[in-house]
Length: 119
Image (cartoon, rainbow, N blue to C red):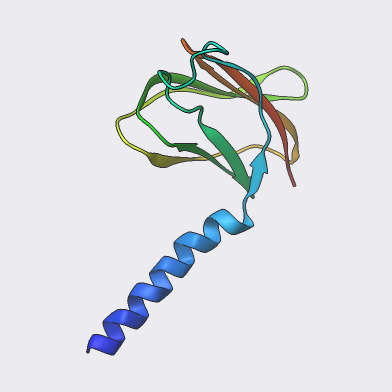
């Protein structure tokens, strides 16, 4: 029984670890907090895409982050305001066509933008 539980635990851990390995990180640019005082502000969220699933990873609590996904014609295809109280990953299933998209993360601390492709 103990061996079965240990095996099940390792399989579950492997599945969760593999999700981040196969996802493509979305490089972002922008301004997040003042340049000279980084320790007071929470770390900026990071983003990755795997298939049609967009994942925003938070390393610290953050309230009222606006997430926008814009297609190559300038149309907003997804928009939501998100608040998290602990470090976590927030996955958004995008029901969009294949193509190039821009991710915009907007908060009172600043903004981040990045481009990604859904194939």
